[in-house]
Amino acid sequence: MAQLTQEQRQLIEKMGIYHEQQGFPPVTGRIMGLLYVSDRPHLSFEEIVETLNISKSAASNALQLLQQMHLIEYTTYSGDRKRYFGALLENWHEEVVNKMGSVLGFSKLLRQANELRGDVNPEMNERVLERIEFMEFLSREVPALLQKWLKERN
Amino acid sequence: MAQLTQEQRQLIEKMGIYHEQQGFPPVTGRIMGLLYVSDRPHLSFEEIVETLNISKSAASNALQLLQQMHLIEYTTYSGDRKRYFGALLENWHEEVVNKMGSVLGFSKLLRQANELRGDVNPEMNERVLERIEFMEFLSREVPALLQKWLKERN
DNA sequence: AATTTGGTTCTCAAAATTATGAACCAAAGA
DNA sequence: TCTTTGGTTCATAATTTTGAGAACCAAATT
Image (cartoon, rainbow over all chains, first blue to last red; front, side, top):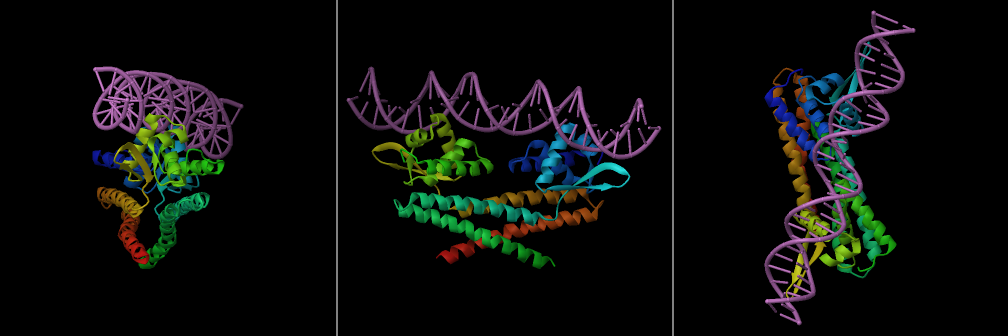
């Protein structure tokens, strides 16, 4: 992965932009891109810094963020001080479930809104309730979908 | 809605923070909060500006953004030049489907990554493929889920 | 025609984000 | 012990985002 082809660079940028749109800083997005495009599943800190031409600090911070987000992990080898970072491809299911958690959080806020509103506008409450129930429906069904996926796989 | 209670203000802030975390600017988030908490389903531009203590320009820009995102709409009444803005509670389903579209877009990038990688690392390709297929699975199943919801409703 | 109303657009300042380079630090090697 | 390696943290600079205020504009009113 020392040298990247033009095509690889372009693809990395596209993945970078995708991740930026998901709320990650640019460098963070490019690292994800690199890890997906790479021939090898794990790249060292140094390789990441050099192939992307970014500062060590930017790399360090981005890698920590990505670990917190459970998007990457790293492996080590005894007798080798380097860390080898790779995309965490496995439990993406988890992420989806977490997303549903945040949706459910918002539906709780909507419920509060309805309570606070009392009965000054029942029609409004009803329309908000519909949305609440849709969110709750999703939160219920998506984990079930995951089970279906896991079952189809095995 | 001229005056807000302390509780209402707090709830608006929470909703604002939720929307910020979804990638919207603070003012935009607060407007959504206000529209959900409000007694009336529609508030005028002026009311929004005054109850939130924001500038007209901030309100104007935020409202346009929210319309583009299909999160709000406004109604007018003939003989009244004002616009009355309200949360668009209906087609939230649409939004979910759109989200899936972006997921599918990323899975296309992952496919490209696999192609570019060729067969230098088949195991990597296989692991990436699994993720691709999970994304595609979601994109297929979520619209079906929506149908189920709509059916249960009616 | 002049003024008011409802809102948009422009300019700019403040604040937040992002990334750099240098200093730093612990572990390993000489 | 001194140096190198692998990476983190700190201070700061550059960029971007956000929002205020004034100028502006079209439609309605006087």
